Amino acid sequence: MVDFIGYLAGFLAMISFLPQVIKTIKTRSVNDISLSMLMLTLATNILYLAYSTALGLKPITIMISFTTFIVLLQIVLTLRFKKTNIR
Image (cartoon, rainbow, N blue to C red; front, side, top):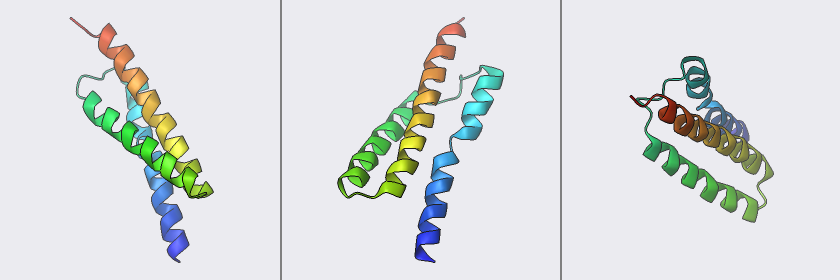
C-alpha cells in the first residue's frame, strides 16, 4: 500500500504540468505564467533527479525525468511566446 501511494504521488507530480503545457500550446498565451516559479521547479527537479539517481531509485528517477522534461518544455514555450507577444 505504501508503494502504491508513492507511485500515485509520483504519477500525479509527473502529469501536473501537462494541462498548462497543453493550454500554452493551444492559446500561445503566457502572460500570467511565472518564469521564476518554473525555474525554481526546474532546480527542484534537478536536485531530486540527482538524489534519486544517487540512491538508485529507478521509478522515482524515471518520474522526475519526465516531470523535468515537461517543465523544460513549459519554460521553452514561455520564453518563445513571451517574445512573440510583446507589444
